[in-house]
Length: 542
Image (cartoon, rainbow, N blue to C red; front, side, top):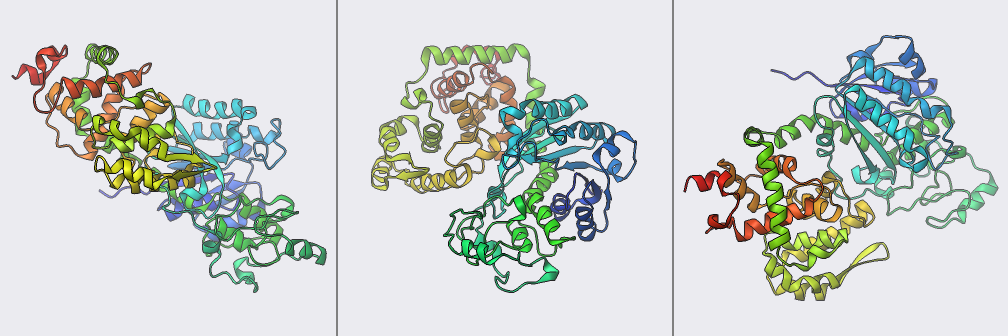
């Protein structure tokens, strides 16, 4: 049976770039509304199959105005951000800050499968906390599962540093499955790469590539700006992604080599918007449209993730998960929780890394422990920790010390893994270890086990790390045959996250690992010393 094509409707659509990203991911773009005539003309020109209307959001919310929004699988919305943005007046009383109420009314009427709201990171600021909570709680009250991420556009493939919050609401599946489908770009795209092929000295009017007319005084000022220095403009750096594109005073950043502000087409390139997307209206209006657009790659990647989300859920809640849930009971859950925490408190193994709190050192430790015995890692752990230190926004590695330490136990491939990890930590996350499972999974050397382990051990977030111990224990305790596939690891994690202690996740996991190492061991399990044996299918079949 052929699947029905997903569709999207764009509220506060601007030039329609958000919809254009969804369209490129295979969605049917139904149209949208905005109160800017020139932006609506741009959306209509580039996505002619949609119905684009110059209409205030309040009218759509209150007047029962029926249009194609009622056919949307996904409502996408880029609510005005001037009241939240650090680049604006940051006015919490800006009347546009409250347009979310009208959006919630529309969502409640339409009941789409998904909602995606994009905004500036200022929405997460303390001064805007109440508005952010009203949006998320409002979606929950309508019946949606809600999640959010603060993404750096450069991580998603746009040649621009532009942090944006994406709020995702889902009516049928947990929103986290959407985020688990997000794939980061392998490398940040630079200004040089983005502008390649755009003539720096010749205008192309049909492609929005026209130059702002500067006075001699301004040109003289611009000519004195070195790479990245600021006078009244900011010059782009060729070898890095662009600064955030804004349209303050209608002045876009300065071209990396020319003594002029970049053109609207060059700005669109830095937003990742294809050259086929042509902006309408006067040049100054085009500038505002480009600056306010959602980066194309960000829009496309969230759209692709929505399409994948059902598959991601099935990969996490498949046959094995369902079999385990069928065998689940609250008494056995409490038994496992209490016993494993008690086991750790009484018999926990003494490893030095269990006492540290630094998320980076915990992440590094888990890289070392991957398919390696704790007793071996213990021999080199302190030496490795001294060889890798965060310094001045970069991670400096003493390769000589690191190689010498790792050579002792023969895990040579970890040196390259650690180098790659450090590079991506700087590039993706500005050297801060992320807390989210999906973001951790985008780091080199990090898989299901390490991502969950870091969340539990570094941030005290209940997330069960699945390794061979978990496969063995689950198979024995519940009497279920397991092949050891990655998809099964995801399902075991999903199930064990029902059981893991919310208050003491670290103690629970450490107790589980130590119990499986000493009692429920691979070759000669000590069932006579196990207080779980009365509930264990393996023991009953002996």
